[in-house]
Image 1 (cartoon, rainbow, N blue to C red):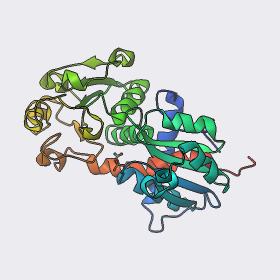
Image 2 (cartoon, rainbow, N blue to C red):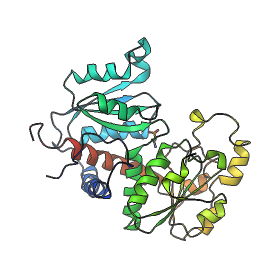
Image 3 (cartoon, helix red, strand yellow):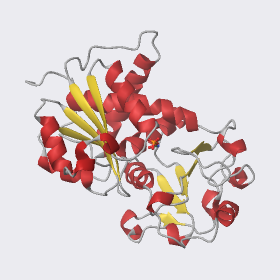
Image 4 (cartoon, rainbow, N blue to C red):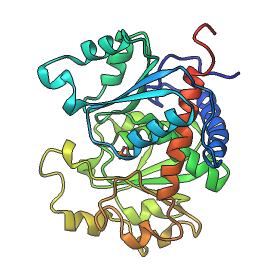
Length: 310
Ligand code: CP
């Protein structure tokens, strides 16, 4: 049985192309399980997991829980707002207490960048990062790559244009690291004020003109404006943002005819992307959601599959 030779899934910056390939290949088998009439395999029977969400989530939380249930594990959900965090308990104390209940894994979303790494250093159980601040959202990057691979048959040498709030987006960071490792060309576009200060570390092309960035793209990915993480004054108004950087059918005419249109969700319709495009024939936005369950099943299987003794 193949496993990931690591305790945690924290980000794609630290993951090798071989590991990414193993996860994407495993996810294909997992999607087959999802499509069965009875979506249940005993693979993780007896394994217990805590889903600890300190920020809102629809897709990530639901898909992790479904993935855990499809593989017969026992998930427990703990929401930050109803946990002992509000009584002043630290993250480390919370998880060390939960660890003493003999759980096998914690899936955590947290508003602070680096919180998943911090936790992983302080507990013995596996930590899966479900999004930490502005840092990484590795399972989203993996599910996006899985969707592209499924539709295009490859990742290598594809031109992927990512548009919008790169600076505050953990989705952008995970996609950039992952796609580059898999041989894709990544171009980013958006207001200069929404570009990360450390952009040269990524070694990607920044194209301020959206039309130029989209020219010849195989994939065009719009990002959500991370209003909860932005300080004020980064762009004049939402209307102007939409005019300059919102994706619509006219704008994506410059992309390749068979270009995929992506968005990680949740979508602010009419701002980041028009409804016509988001719901149109080239959109794979809902396929991304389906991929999320398969990829999360693959990750949990590869991290925790087999017996504890093994
Ligand atoms: N894409 C994503 O992370 O969505 P949620 O915030 O709904 O989980």
